[in-house]
Length: 183
Image (cartoon, rainbow, N blue to C red; front, side, top):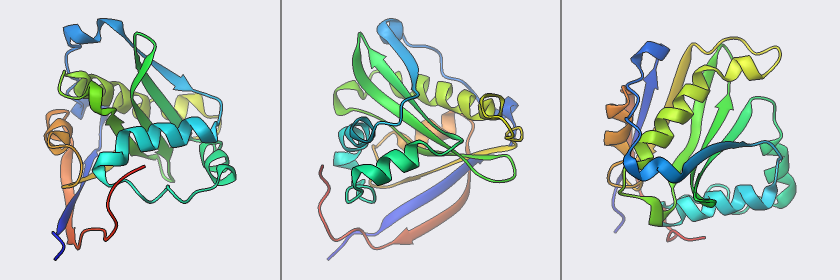
């Protein structure tokens, strides 16, 4: 018998709504850098390293060409947190029509969780969502930033979004995926 999965969609409609997390002392060795080369291998690494224990599966069958094409789309950005040179987590932003930016994927590698880095990375990524239009010619200014999370994500995910000011605008419940998580 499968356990139902709850998915929450959350949004900010003004940059003033963001309640940025304080930079934790543990983040002194953390740098957040935009990955500007569309690398299928690096994209898949981040996706599987962060999402393997959270049931992220939708991109697992993607061939390298699909990864590269997706990551090369105008308005798609990947921001990677490095802790003393080691990847700690990432935020993938996806520009949509009418000034909307989705935080498509966000998370930390398991060894980086539970130390306050998630609030810092989410704050930074959300700020980059608000100024995304400034980096892409022809993009309108961001009017709305949204994200979804589910009950399969980490135990602090929903609370982290809410602490940053995101508000739930939709909730759905569905059957859990039938295949086990994993990279």
